[in-house]
Length: 103
Image (cartoon, rainbow, N blue to C red; front, side, top):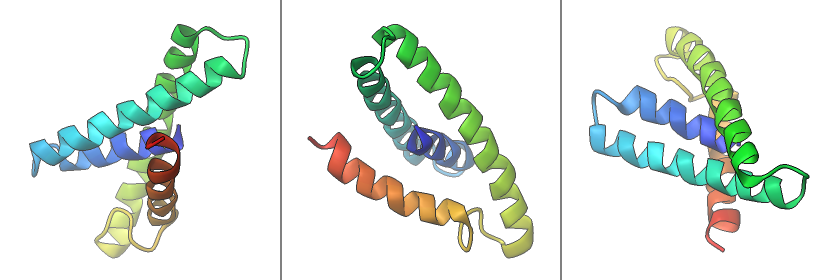
């Protein structure tokens, strides 16, 4: 679900400069949340709808953390994510997309 939050963060920062790219990040965030909800409902006692609601709430919370930390990093470095854990998370999410979501 962390990857969903990360892609929501990217969608937010790209919204004005590149609406098309922002939409792609938003869609990818939805795909990550859907996959997480599907897995959660399979391995828990929660229904898919309950899992989906929980994943969306968690993704929004995580996005808020990325926004705060990204802004702090921007102030320090001129980049939202270079030189921070956000860049590391991006690398992890690329692997997750390739290995988990493309099955």
